[in-house]
Image 1 (cartoon, rainbow, N blue to C red):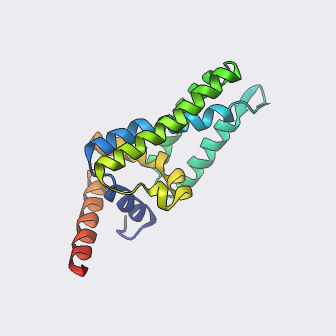
Image 2: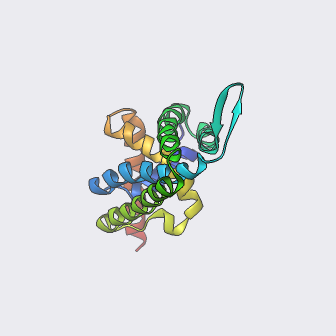
Image 3: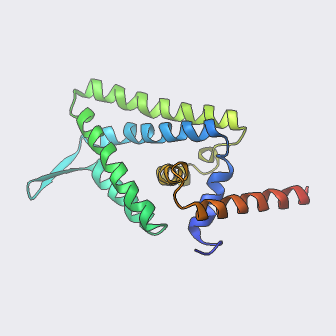
Length: 177
């Protein structure tokens, strides 16, 4: 993988604002929680094709998967499994009365984002969501999978490259100041 690849640029940008272990932990919990909050209402619209029921949550996750395939196949496949589990939980909750599932969705969504902001306050870094809301919401689920790999010690060569680029950028910024 070239150091200037799209994946490397995205990982370096993300990781530079997510160095504090508490912030990483909060994101590992908060991002799937936000996903659940978004996916619950998407399960309310479904169709049956060949005896198999699909809902908008499934289709949305397949769309994210297709985008993530352009970044990294292994991360994308792990995301697909992870996201379909969340989509199935969303389907279960979405089948509850709308008053119940709507409240759960709203609490997951707002609670997940509140956690993100707390994590960034401790990190003392600006959430990407503030600067680039669309990019952040498209990339955050992918980065959760990436963080799982990092925590498990998988693909260390990739993470060493990312950390080296972060260090280089910080040194260049310090030299320019």
